[in-house]
Image (cartoon, rainbow, N blue to C red):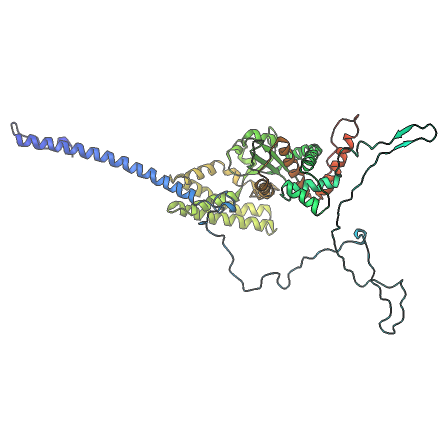
Length: 493
């Protein structure tokens, strides 16, 4: 009803004039209340969205986000446990046992022969030669001092003819360090791979191996090993840069010298890089100015400049994002339920492919309807207008090609678990040692981690490699006329 619909008062009627003025005031009040109501509805919608977002943050855990299980709050859901089967704990009948392998005779230090002295039937004395071995039992023992200590002495001898003195000299290569190559390799392995502190490493070396060393000696050996591994580290990085398929990830690191630990891994090589930043500059320092090949990553924005058709998004991260939506109420929860169902079907097909039940062409054919269903689901979520859900779907639609790279590129996995497994020991080291205190410590960490994990991937002995590398490095230092260059990489391919 408008002012035109109101009956016009008669001339000179004071009652009609009063009613008209009152009606106008009432209409103005209604207009103000309607405007206030629209503002209140908009504010309520904003508050609902904020409450929804805050509730999602409160309910974040390792199942629906990138948080580690150790950061789960007490209210987090416990992992789904399998129902009890009623069987006893431990290995079951028919299970293939795991036993200690008997060492070959050439690796045995001492043999103790147990020969019978007389016949158990006629009690006659038996000969002490001949016969056959019917039983073998090997016992391992740690000596009181497991390390051997060699003292090099330089003598001053007087000639009986001319009465002149001649002094003996100790070779420069022997005077480079008081710790041998293999003990230095074990020391660096203790302080890095086993995640122990330097004090713990010094205590273990002194109490167990009988090699008392100071904390300064341990730091000096780490610095020496870092310099010895410089050439090998550059070769490993060059190999990763040229690799056609690689998994890339990053995590936090403590101390001012470096705030982030980056890593890139192939099927047989792993390279770590410590950097102050988490942007493109750090990524270029790891993989070069122009990234070659296909990379598997999460949805972090630093990787956005890489083309989606040469990138694979980690489906494990996507699964956690879908679960976070499933745990919400309303349409977002229903959308998350459908996305999780679709994810399980995708992983089921991939496991069949890994078990060689289907070939790659069959995998692509079976994945085709799942790709269409996911595209429809993402378009539906992008149009929903629901906070977080619409943004997630819009981002995945923009990177849709990066969801299915694993179907067409050999050697590419749908998840970034390979990189996650490589980073886990480094994270444990960071939590125990609180990162690095200097640039030298950062260089040692990235180089020793690269060599350790590369040796692990290739099935070679890291101790032997560290020993050979350090021995070559010391030989080069003992030759002052030779430039300090590194030898070719000795890691077995």
